[in-house]
Image (cartoon, rainbow, N blue to C red; front, side, top):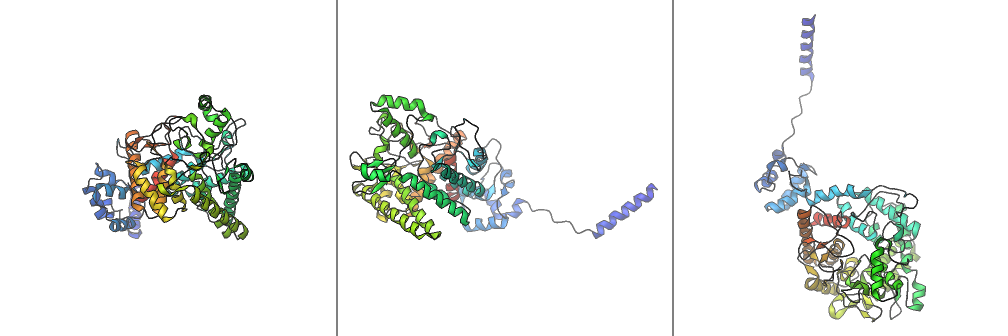
Length: 516
């Protein structure tokens, strides 16, 4: 019986072999799939270990990658490495750090927080959708940070996360009437630079309901920034609104809450006591400086070397008013798209009036720069800063003004490692030698918009070199950098933070444009 069973089994196997389809050809190895590209990478010694590229995972079909290689024709190890990083996921080499691109991709999950409802007594605000935090001591979402963070999320295809964060912002506006500085109860007296119109433009969704929700949020936020207008027309300044010498209205930074900041209570009490001024005034100026995002900078100080001379509420800032012009322009456009002609006409007129006021009061022809305005001296402040690039960023500047600002950037703000925040070295973190990711992006986009592409590229590539050098040294993405020495930054009220949301976003967006 055993012999008969064995014979029948062998017959069955032979029959299956005759009727089964021929086996599929084995997959081709990398040197066959990628042919001349594979040989070029290995011959140039792009990776110390030949196995590294052989183990890389293509991001696209091999045919598409080869077509891109033939079109771009990268030459040399550096150019080839940039091409490989763009089109392949490269495994980490033993003892080596991942590439910047891979490191940033790995950081997004670490910085993402789920939707949550805070327990009673917590300072946190409820968030209906997942969101990304900057990192370090910044455990909550921040307003203007998020625009620059989302640039990197967009480059990495994180559309769902972007949509959720925009829903979070619309939710904050519906609950509080504005987007607070951050999602803590102690931030509900102030906002941050109003990027909501630019954030909404990053939304991957195009449906009418989402557009209507964004428009409602933008109009509510605009009302928040302008609610002091009736009183300012009479008194000269109220809340965030300032009457200029010709009667036109512009805006300043402010904070509606009194006293020292919860998150910097000891520091604010010490600054106010040392000032010799009414402490309530100092607290308001410190809080307004925090709303600016530039906390702190010589822009806001009577004496650049002494924080106790802070006078933020006396300054009409060019960056804030440029962003509000962009917001009014965006509301007019969105109202027109929604068929609301009255709204479109109203906000187009408001944008035009603000644009005229910026040109009249914040442009310094003899110095070729946009400047902040000092209410006390009734003249532009002498502080040169990267804020001069905001009118270029939003498209408000004339071509001749853009050319003049580009000359000023080359002469005073361009550093070996990127864009200086100001030319003054004061010990404040928003002054030299520090450079910040958002200002690199604003400069790059503003200059490129007006045809200054070489200068824009120089800033981007210098910034990438600084971030890469610090990453090679520390293994971290940092909040700010010393753009004079390609090193980690310093100064300010707290230790240097790593994480870091907006650095990740801007660096990732620059990598998309300029490679490795």
